[in-house]
Image (cartoon, rainbow, N blue to C red; front, side, top):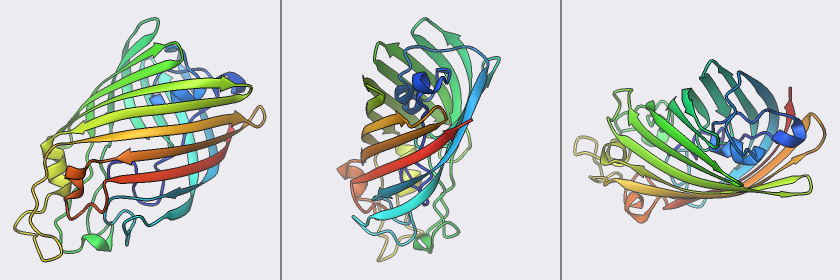
Length: 284
């Protein structure tokens, strides 16, 4: 539900090894940029596309994602790895299945030598309903959202800093989300090693909408609960290796900590989740 552990696994995959694969370093999604070793924004039009297959093993702290999920249960699945970006006159679309953000629409309205400011729109929370998972039977529907706001990215040598300031524009929960992430890449021979740490603040409107239990839906299984605002933390370590001019291997380990306050919700099983993923993709 926190856009990291959701239905199956289309929540992890993406990146392109820029230098070795001769892919332009378009400024954008941090998870992709750090894997490419990007050192600054590129304002040119154009894009790229790649597709592959991968395997992931993960634990999810959210009840019903996937259906029948239990605390500390390890889920192993194959996934389709799709990574693409296209930009035209400042407008862009990004799809990176291993990213923390995944699919983003936006407009790049300002660039500096080592920084970029975009206006973006993206879904941050998936629907929770009986149609999505039998685990939610008896609970009211919690719709998926769509949020929008500025995204600022700074390139500082081998470091990338990215800030999101998003507001709900889908009339779902009227909440606000702020995230700050720091990424770094290292080059070792043909390997690009990367690390990401970050924190995401969700306002009370968001956490209450998805994880509170009101009196109308309360039961012995789901007692009344009022959710406070929450801060989640992420840590990731990964590697990218070009197998040839057109084929690339990627792997990552990711840990998400959603905080002990959030864990008190009947809809949350644990205060953290973990995942490991590997993939091989073809670059067109």
